[in-house]
Length: 511
Image (cartoon, one colour):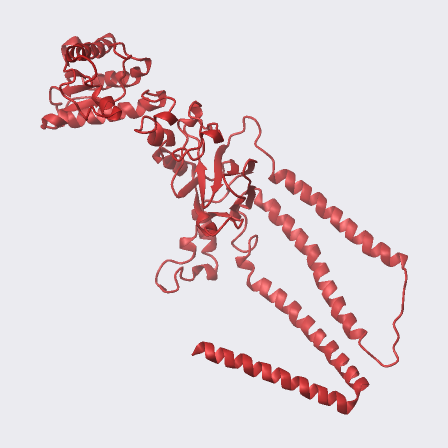
């Protein structure tokens, strides 16, 4: 029904326009062409002046009313240190171009009014005027030179890279259809190297895990964090089409170009919470966030800094929005501690990823702290439990040379962790048990399992753990933990476990 009414309205307007045209034509015939031309020129001239006044008033009033929703004004001032320079540059440019905008419109409609059609008036032809040429050449040249110099100065400030040794955080943003993959450095503060030839479904960034700097790199979830007052350098690139890394509240905007890495450096100066408090001062930001829920949170309460793609990169372009939260250094450090290394959690020693893991079946130095914490927790649980199966703890990071009882170098991390746990609980007694898969002779496997358990006992003894607290046994392939039909199962069966032999007194002091 609504569509029919709209269609009828269009038809009615069309009929009115046609009838006005016919009336105008009849009037011209009655009055004569010259009189009609004179009247039309006068009407057009006055209508042009009215339009000029209305247009300029509308421009000024709309800009004033919308000022708090425009970047650089009201509460939406720059949240980064360099953004002040850009906002100042835009304001200076707006000042000069605004003058030109107003003057040219006034001249346009004034000339249309002043030089409207009059009988007997003749146009003057002026071929050249030196003074006029100087004015309209010199003034724009001086203004343009001023703007260019200010622009170059702003460019040098905004695009300055970090200096060698300068304290900063470096992160990496890789655009793809339709997502941003953000990579943070781990505890070493350095991002690892990449090689596009190493890109796989599991390793989307092509990280070269032979580079130790990659081991602790973090690829967080949807929410991203940055510390306030800390310089941030963003490496920017893309995997498929042109994207654009845009943090509008920080005045950060840089193309992400496949095969051509770019960067941007900025320093956040307002936390998300502080920016919200600024928004809170303005009436339009105290309106309900959801108009359907007037009693719900206000707009300022739901505000978040956001990362957007400022290029039309495809149909899913809208889904590249990510939330960036700026917090205190303490909050940022706490958030980083909750993040896990991509390599250690997704690639390292994970079944089916042997080809992508250059340190397959090895323990890395940065795993030591996590190994010790897990062992300590497992021992405490086992000591407090009365269930026999709960008292058996597997040592996942102890390895031996093939067919031998010789411990590999990387086994020391878990063995040293076990030394620390046994030192922590001085009354704890354990039994080390060796196991093998079913490949080879059963008797040889049994003997090898005994030797491997004994090797672990010997290592612990040389580190000061009393022999009376340690026992060893070998079970060969008689107690498989998994099927021996597949390599992954056989790998699980080649293991050393230890059983907690006594309960831990609840009041035992930790040494």
